[in-house]
Image 1: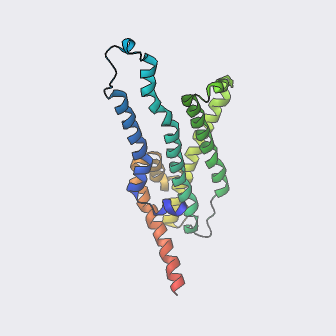
Image 2: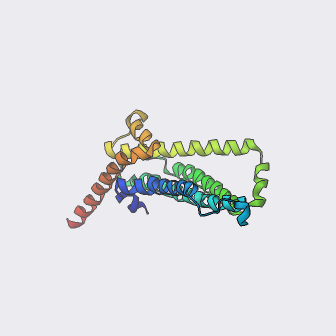
Image 3: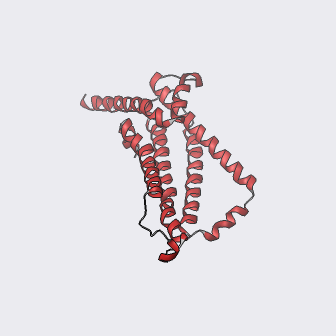
Length: 214
């Protein structure tokens, strides 16, 4: 998986991370407004209003799973850069990879759990899950905020990894602030960040091949 993300082109990642969710949203909007073949008088035809609404709302059933797909791709991109480029760092520079790994999986598990819960509600299999609402709101809010902190830490770590691999020295936030915000606004940043990642990975691969030939 790491090699896939490191070798992938910017347009490929853009389609995976932005194109698929956008296509789903456009399809859902189209289905909501496309003319239906229902008779003018729903009550006379025996088709209830609930059936008509359900015929449209059913397309929202897939929303949590599209979001899970997006999250897995998005986090997979972060993971591949942070872990895959560690070999490009100077040997004397040690980054806190273990801390990154711990904080990385917390929001990933949290978001997927929330999406599965929502998916259960949409499909009707989670009707008894409303007991979830009884949880103290303070705990839920704190967990949500902590997950946001973990995501920002992941962006910080990934941006620092990229810049350290480029400059071959210790860096401060001012050195990689641009990469940090490009990762934050990924739909723009992927066009700038990914070519750098491709170049770093290609240099690594070329160096290995040259050493094997010698």
